[in-house]
Amino acid sequence: MKTQLAQEIENLLDKAVSPEVALLFKENLEGGKLTRDENQTHHFCAYFAGCDYKNKLVFIGHHKKSGLWLFNGGHIDEGEILSEAVKREIDEEWGLDIKDLNVSEPSLLTIAEINNPTKQTCRLHLDIWHFVNAEKDYFNPNQEKLAEEFHLTEWMDIEKARKVVTDKGALQALNYIEANCF
Image 1: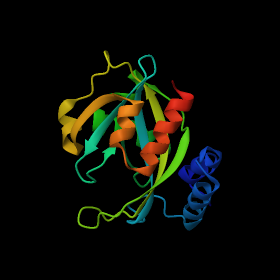
Image 2: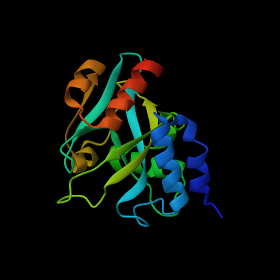
Image 3: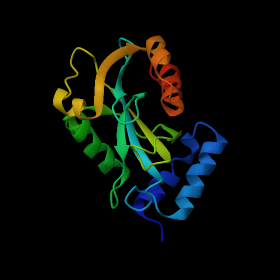
Image 4: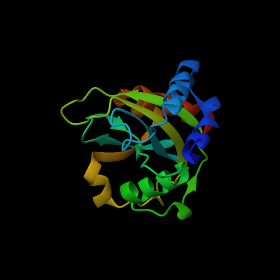
């Protein structure tokens, strides 16, 4: 019997950036081990990208573990459904209550191949993206929480973000934001 999380993810397969990504999501769903607790190397993650739709800016950070410029997000924990994971991750990383934010429904599926064996056991993240409409002038995440995972965070326009982002999934999220949010 499928878990609620598996059913939620299966219902999102049409949001994949490509048929190949949809296939990887489907194969990992069939394996039944969806979270990092169940599968250390391949698991699903909830990402949330802060976007100032009015000023056409994205909130992005230089991640400590990966050394990459990334959006916020994290692993889905065993027993969680997607909305619970997003709520928890927004609290953990931004120190904000999801009820006070304009968070989209899951809108994009990407994958992130990870090759950082000295710092991470993960090898493949199956990323489920939410976009958060947050005006720069009113967005006030907890700086101490951000500093736990990021060297630096800042608002950037799409072009500047494209110059610093090398992660394929984050680049695909930038493309999605530009085409669908701005």
